[in-house]
Image (cartoon, rainbow, N blue to C red; front, side, top):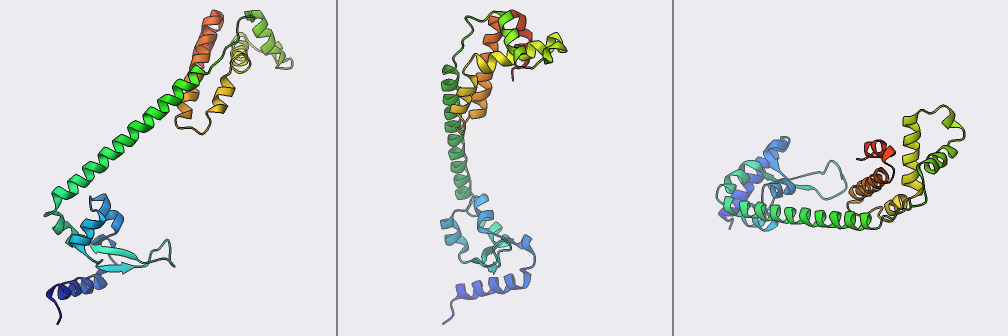
Length: 207
């Protein structure tokens, strides 16, 4: 004996076959999940898919399951509370994940800035500028004061602090870009305080 539910399903399947060329009429499982459906809700309220379609991105793979958008929308009016609850829980998990990522990011920043070492004690301004110019193979003969200051600040940052080492040690970690920026700013502020003549250039290089 053919059950009424089977006849209803057959009607849906015949309708699907005649309209399968119109993608707007159907929803995939990911489409439904984005609207709050879970696998259990799909099974309990929609049942088997209304039609199947070859996956255009994976031709040899299993066919895509499609449910009638019209039928899903009608059912949603009766289970909206359940759908809202699912979406709410997903949002809470997302916010929790973001908060955890923020904590990890801040921990990396705190650790990186705490690891910075600075060795400015024996470096006068004259010695710093001369050391920076010595690396330029005579380019200092034409450089203006602003350029010389930039070279001096860069020399201090790369050669008189652990700036590069700390950045290398934290490569690949969550928040590494934020940590690198924080370390850079700590070092540049230290340069500005040690050599007030370089303060404008050091602070200009902050990010």
